[in-house]
Length: 400
Image (cartoon, rainbow, N blue to C red; front, side):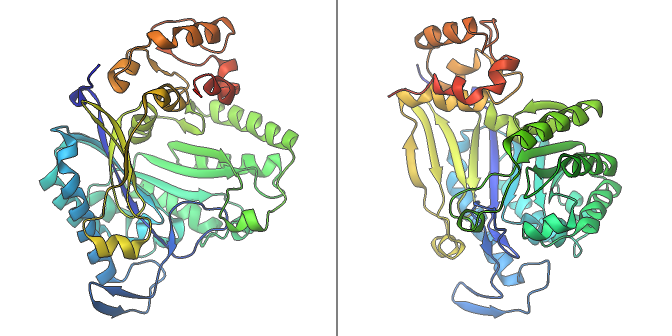
């Protein structure tokens, strides 16, 4: 079966790779911001402010993003961009003026939906320099604040550069500036964290005005400081109690869990829904990953990770451009779709993979009989029990 890209939604991911400092738990492609940066053969020396990129570095990187986007223009195949997510790193290190220029340039390359969702990840510790209203004016209409916790002692342990007051003020100021769509990232299961402390974080974010919460458990990842010097985390029974009590708090305040770690009071994150529904996404920036459907197959690609290499290439090479193998397609699709509480229509599978569901019917039938998938052939969706044992369900789609 040939794919029809026009039937598959398209998003855009933009990666901003720098942070003021690297957090000990972070395994994302982020790099400590240099105070002296060679840019296109010249050296710009800056006394780095606490919350801004050197101007020459910002300009060079934004120009590289546009060159990167221009080489990917044919991959859009005439489709509109339905959502944009600016992640990092710390994207709020880029000025609002820089984003205004960036989107002006991007709109000469791509068509954007009239109601395109544009999300900016922001660190509460890097926002003093730039009024939220300026980001809103630049076209950013959704904000995601990396709070992690409102406990100042825990923030220090996590290596964050903001404190409790910074986090609370950032949420308040964002709402006052006009951001009606505001996500707050919170972690639970922090070192020595009690259930009461975890619930305090949820209550505070809700009281401050968050409309969406990404609430996830701290995990220790390889190639991080915490992996090398592991902190003592709560026992499993405490983690289970935190999860259960936290879910009750969120539900009591009108938040709906629509994905494993995502809760929305009003609107889900459209960009993340596109990931989980197996949509396509272009990707620009150092270390960015993309997924694109073409009539003959679905391809993944990535960009070089190091900012200096990314800047030197201009436009950056399409690394590891590789088709998803036919035998891997069931797991690739289900790994995303079944993370959603409501799953997806069964019709999404043939439309977005190019393969029929017929070969999966024995597995689907078995999982439905076991009470792990809903007994509805028109949906691919876990039951409540299946959602609790999601890894076991997904393992059924792995082929040797």
